Amino acid sequence: MSADALLSVDDVLALLRRGPGFADEEDVDQLAHALQCAARLEQEAPLDLELQIAGLVHDIASIAAPDSPATHAPVGGRMVRALFGTRVAQLVSLHADAKRYLVTTDPGYRATLSRRSLETLVAQGGLLSDPAVARMQQLPELEDALTLRRADDGAKVANASVAGLDHWEPVLRRVAST
Ligand SMILES: [Fe+2]
Image (cartoon, rainbow, N blue to C red; front, side, top):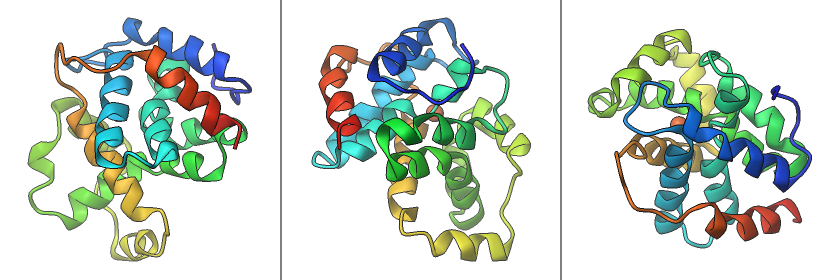
């Protein structure tokens, strides 16, 4: 499957169901990672369905087109924009730059990253320049993007028990319809 725009929730579910084939050198496969990330955001922001769905689909480009860690965030944003709207797309697009932002501005953050996240950080551009940090700080979605990023970093727990896609299907349909 290519990294084309996703036009239906069924397309999203089909891609996520391919996630178990993609371990990405982490302790969890892509589906488990997506479900853990969404579950963390549901706990943290129970009313923000868009943020939860952004967490569920944030790495969808890595399933559709593996081996492109440097571009998977903006590509993923483009894939989900038509279906889930601008805000979800922005949150997905920002999740790699949010890592760069946190590494640049939070001295303790780097130590929380997995080995794989540190490797891809280099390909994604590493530290941000001062002007790039300032540009990020102007973004209305920055705080939510950082919340998603921290959920992403924590969503790599082997054998964690979280809700499955059955739980998320109606939420996907609700966000797609708004
Ligand atoms: Fe992720």
